[in-house]
Image (cartoon, rainbow, N blue to C red):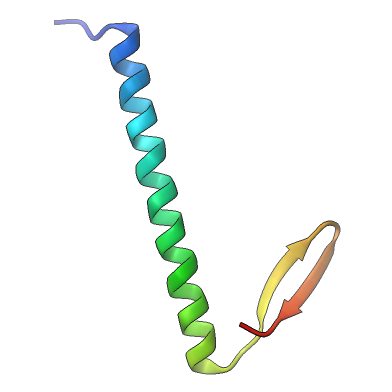
Length: 54
């Protein structure tokens, strides 16, 4: 059976949700790692690169 347009949109939406959840987990893990190693977290704020203590 051919997938309908709404089915493909639902699948795309589910994939995007999974990606967002995965990226949130990566962010949490990175911050935990930086805290454990006592190193700065480098982020982009506006047009400037900023070193932040986690």
